[in-house]
Amino acid sequence: MSPANLNLTSLAANAVVPITGSNYQVVNLGFGHYLDNANGGLSDGNAILSWSQNSPETSNQIWSFLTYPSSDGSTVFTLQSLSTVQSGSGAVIDGRGGFVRIDPSTNRVVQGGAPQAWKLIEVAPSVYKMTPFESIFSNSGRLVATDMSSGIHDQTTNQLQIQQDVTALQQLWTFN
Image 1 (cartoon, helix red, strand yellow):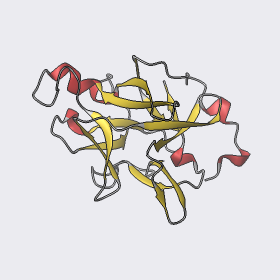
Image 2 (cartoon, rainbow, N blue to C red):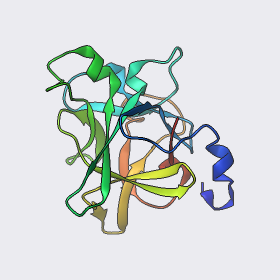
Image 3 (cartoon, rainbow, N blue to C red):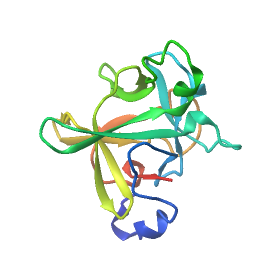
Image 4 (tube, rainbow, N blue to C red):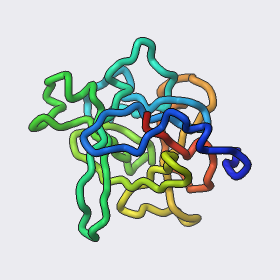
């Protein structure tokens, strides 16, 4: 699915430009899935999924958007699962934990105690690709966060992955 023939602005009607310190649901444009800290898990390495929207809304699908300056002067961000902050568990260090990061052995996205820097690439108003700030590349180009399945199956199938940037809808995200 290519966004070239679509009106991304209408698809992202409820989307906003994220502001540091604010909480959001992060939604995939391709499949309508929500970024989800699987089962509100607290352990380092817990899977981050692309999942159906919880009803009623739950804290494992709400993410704090946190920005900070990088060494090259640009602004980078991290996402933190609200469910880990509210737990008061040992997974939270100095009030922080549950940050979105990549498991380098699998290229799958997990949550953990140490934040990873990410950059937003705006492709239309309030529509973004999310890429690691460290400029992680495959042999074929930049890698971006990708929703891997159109359906809801299980944690393995629906775990968010880092894949080659091909500007597909499953690589586009909004903050709502």
